[in-house]
Length: 66
Image (cartoon, rainbow, N blue to C red):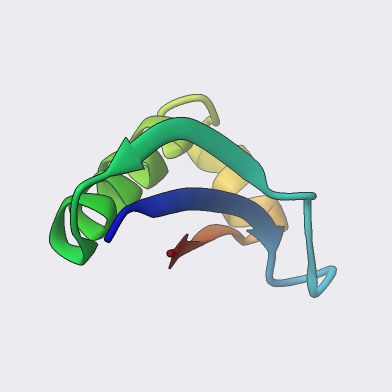
């Protein structure tokens, strides 16, 4: 089985998420996709200031789909 990762950037205040960012990599299993989802989320947060994260209550969510 192969999995595709899609990451969403969301605002808890607006209760909305951006269109998903589909990563072009196929992961060999659920674990690899999951681990990369958390890594990608951390990299996304590094693009925002603490003030922006707090002001908009930015969060990420992701899916791993076969």
